[in-house]
Length: 412
Image (tube, rainbow, N blue to C red; front, side, top):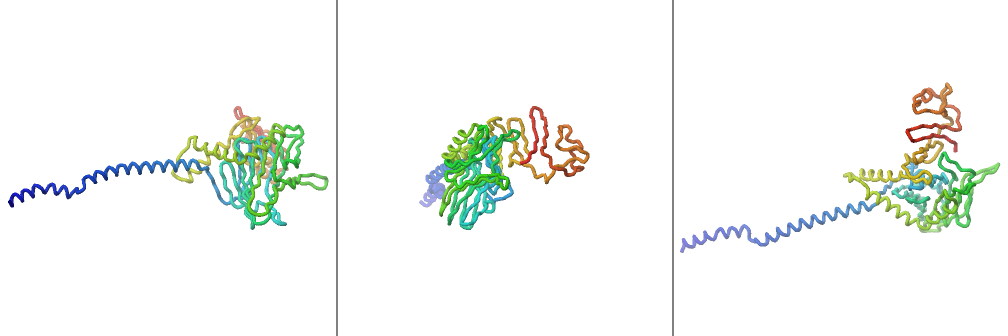
């Protein structure tokens, strides 16, 4: 009995050992099954999160924001128009190939004080379709948003006002109605249309026209010239905001087909500027999503890369006379202009000449023709030159293969 018990115990021991090693065999298989599905589910969730994050990132429009730098150049452009100025809000307006005005700026009227907006510019926020400047005073804030819709012959300026006491915004500018050099207009004029609350720019032939105004505009002041006094400034006021929040809209439009066409564009921009701003944002977002791109590991580098891509597409302009093409660069127009007859035109800024251009003491002056081969001639050696009197014009004509270029200086 004892031996049988012992033998039977020995016989049962392996089974008991297996049971001790794996007391829940069915549960272990079930847990392994669940583990595989858990890994699959977690992997799927991670993949969905990554896709959602990428979609959310691609749906966001690039944006930059920082403190205003008053000396920095600020362009806001579309394919048919552009605003070129600095970060204080001073700019000039172009609807290719027409320039409407320059030195646009705002003045805030609070009580008996007139506060220049330049000194109150605080923050700049830039998106592909617009740029916003925040002005802040003691009792008010005004956000100026400059927008040039992608395919429109004009621009929109929105002023979002928040004030604790009555505030009125005045917009002032100097009329500069002209074509891109070397073209020129005859006698030009600026007039105020009381019915439509707009300044109207025109010329004698009636072929070119531009408008700038607002539905709430009034108290317009026109430039004038007399034999004892003169002023180049034109201005309008956008109406008083008593207290709280308000929005004012200022619209710029121009046409090479006469006043009726400019007025049509003006009304279209005024009625649909909100939709046009959204469409412009969608246009740049789609451009980033649908064109070849790189995914970079560094966020700052990715942002710089995306903005470089946007700058490339924004370099494409549409001139009704020259067609579409890429411009070499943009700056506010000044005395020095470069025009390339390769289906596009460019304006450059020129540093002030300090009262004179340089000339060679032996008589060879810069206004002479300079050939491409002769660019190393002694006449170009400024080290041996001295200041001379201001010349009225400077013209240099170059020939590069099939592309003509002209360099011209004029006084403004």
